[in-house]
Image (cartoon, rainbow, N blue to C red; front, side, top):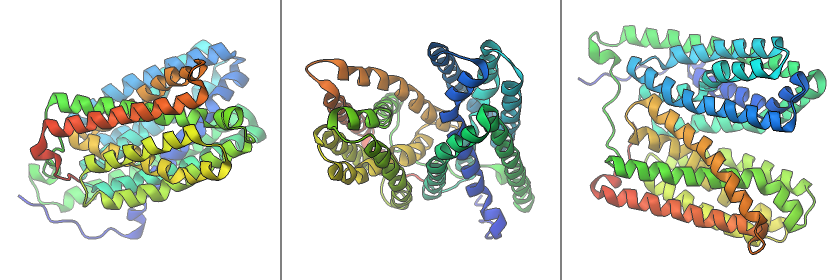
Length: 405
């Protein structure tokens, strides 16, 4: 039975998802750059203490992203868990503000912070479950990127004015707003369910999309490719400023300018590639992004002047948009269950961040140097492109079908 599309939502209802994406993105963009400072100022943690605490925290987040989304899939309870993420954020901020030593703070980060960090995962899972098109999902992902443009500077401003506890207070305010927007989304979902025809089909998702690839082996190849893509992207983002000042010989300011230009270009790139996703297969767009990434890393390895450094950033924007936007939709096409698919995609970012460590370590080898880091990124991205091609060949009859859900 085909369910008729609901009438166009009024303007306030249409703003709920963009507002939620902005707020959840802002929450992560505030906490991530400030967490090390919070640990150092509130608990007198050493550099080694901070490193181990963050490692345990991210490991807890990895497990949470595997278990909780799978539970959400079984119960179709994405918005309920999204609401719980807001409540847990308030509990986390209260715990970090209350405890006086690092061990209980670490426990709070794992037990409360890991699940609380699944806000964007549950939001995108809800959008997929509701039958949202790929272009709208990628557009929502662009709003999260907007939050990252302003989040880190805002975090430093708050820390400078109110210290670590000021960030915790800001998180509480954002969490309250997140709870309010999620409650409004839940109320709207209930209204739509009442309007829909009665019966089990009223809450059934849209027809399952034709998968771009099929089979466990092909899916594993795509996941492995994205670990490589994410690892290379994490390497470039974390090491670029040091590379610009240490090897290219430019003022360190150019590193910051370059990262700012990259962040600014990422938003329109996501919007454009999201539009293209309605007509071009997702795997093809991912391959295009990988090719742009290879060209970008080769350019970084050869760059000697600031103008070329900035001129390379559109290639970076195309690559990031394909990986972070189309990649999310691709995983939702491949993996059964909107929550499990989104959680697995988010975990490729976490694993990629771990992979970036050995890639950066290659710069210590005399024969390679720091330029060799980006040549290695080019080779690994090319290897990821090969894995995508191998996955596509594993199911050629399906690879040409764009699936938008």
